[in-house]
Length: 250
Image (cartoon, rainbow, N blue to C red; front, side, top):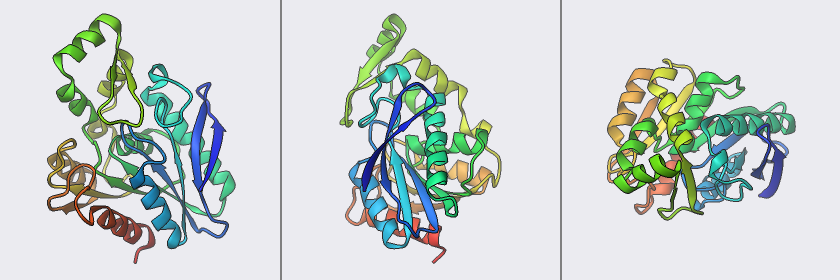
């Protein structure tokens, strides 16, 4: 894996991790979850595993995450979408003959769905792990009264719930979430979508994933006892095996 810096369209650089092989027939863009990074253990495990099957991967940090040079003022939905578009364009230049796919976790899956619904793109296959399909609702429910007060009075709040780095959330970001409801933006069979979700997910309820899959034709695999991180013994292996089967058709 090789670190790279891309110059984005939002006035800042995008920190990336290139794990593409010369002869890869497929290149999968990996989008991390909320508070995570392009180098999380689960992301690296997936990237390493897919390469064994001839599938190259390319991950990147969302604004204010991982090694991103900007803070939460730049953490906006439109910026996340633009960064994903920049990454896809770069991967397309590096691998012009390769099929493009997406592997996204939690918040990254939310962004990927908005991207598929609203942006021009080359990829036709998307694998979603623990997709936060109701991100606006999750944020509303998770915000403590004190955080709500801070948002109203100072326009931002600093949160860190075991994240890679503390995250500044602005009132504008919260407004962005309310303006981007994937249940209103998506349509049936807009892409070939596979989802894997634990029935014990404590953050993104499996009921929301079921509703999304039913409405939009996604194939949902439920894993009994799995939490949001798939931290159960062998949980990540189940994710990897499902992703490999989805992308290779084997």
